Length: 226
Image (cartoon, rainbow, N blue to C red; front, side):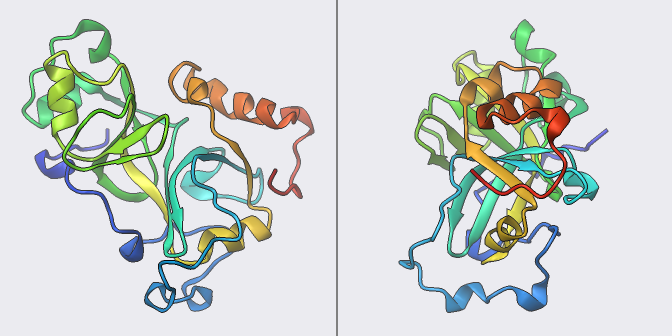
């Protein structure tokens, strides 16, 4: 079971300092220094608010078979959350470990997700609507919050109507995601919040493939992004 220390909910990571996920194609020796990249440089392709689907046989390890929602993508890197990998940790247990009392029955049994291999002791809440929380970024239809006050609101019965709680995240350094996309490590498609919140975790990968018009049976490497 994944641990959830009391300090799990803190501020949002800075993209310029992201510990990068070990991806399929990029190595540290090929990655540009984030400090050498101007903030105002435009991305050739912005994968923010996209689903990334790990290509079978290409992406291995803890991210194999995952669907990742990209929360933020800039020239300095990218941050995303795995949305289809529940852990055996429930929200009730998480709240107990961070000293919050959760009394809302239906929420208690919801699962905490593995959000990615970086900082797996750190909590992230992807939710809708956005609300007003201390450490939060508005993603349009959704918001990403890492401060404890969003969970306090849930405990008080005033939290977001829909949410997905993860421990850890997937991070890419400057240029890493672009390189992995060029090497066909991931499929990409515009995100659909229905898949994040309403589709069973085990069905989210095929549901995201359906957005692309791809039959899972026919998927066998060598595909690019949409």
